[in-house]
Image 1: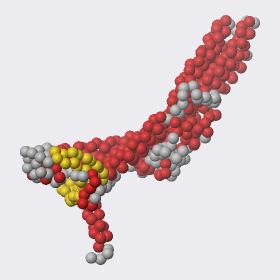
Image 2: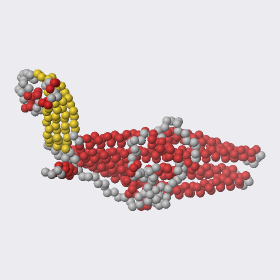
Image 3: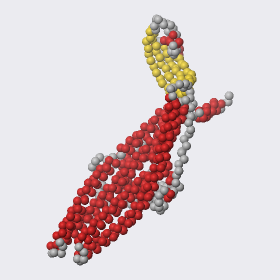
Length: 495
């Protein structure tokens, strides 16, 4: 035998063990993926470039440092994110537990016993009944003695059929699923926070519009009263103007209330105590820019969306569980042993003559277990089929969400352009109506109607701008957010 023979034997044994692993290795199921987004939605390549992907910190594209600060604060302090990170750590610990069976299990034990053997028995009778050899088995009937024992127990299951390795593979896949779940929680948090922030800024702008409307109507009311005092306007014109002024003033408290409620929601998202978050008023258009969004290719969605990756990880785990279930049909091969010091007298316990040991292989072959192994395999295969259907459904839902949002954003861009044209025309109409009224060419109803149209146009523009920003955030979320290999999951080391 050459000096390389032991190495060759070990390599052969390792290859033999690998060849005996039960179950098929995972292969990603075939998925019908469109070549580009234009086949599922009217996506403008200039506005939604397919040759780029969102940056990892995609929320910076809105150009708002205040929003960026809130998101970073939420990722650090939000309790849902912390809980998701704790689940990742838990699943990583489960991998260590699942893989522990690949290694020898060694235990150290020590004991002292005072024994009295029955006079009505035979020496060695315990051995005939299946007991382990020992002093108490071969002792003379009626004798009494002490027994000091210290030993090391060894058990090592040889994972010849891959049961333990498939279990470790499933546990690793479940770690991936929990990591993607943590990404999904963080992505939903960022999306909810962005939408809440935009809602607050929309309310700020509505409050500003309402305040400006109150000032205009109050000024108009003063003019109408002066005209009425000299007989150039009727008391009805004064009453109508007072109604409109009061209506505009009444809208502000409700808008302020909605802003306070939305701010409370933002405090919860950022993990802040109630009343500790202060956001100075700022209009929506002054707060954020509306960026172009790189959508990438449809095939890249399979590698970016956390819900798809999470679903695939559960599918990988289910596939490994099938192999694990198949391995239960085969014999279990183990090496067991025990060695230590045993003596009837403490003074001789640590002498060389007290040494004893036993070691050897064992095999357990399942013959009849009442259908347990068959049921275990059926459960594993059924669960795999469930995970497969869920994976396919998640992909379909993902493509639908992206397509819906691309259509929505295109429509909102056109809608916003038309509404801005309407707003320009409404402002012109108010100016003309006011001038003509002062010249006595029209009655005051025309002025009131023009002011109502202007207020409605201003409000609609703000609502559509906020809705478009909300759709942008939703699109970033639907695309899986920004993603890099180094940032594929929320880091469990974060505070």
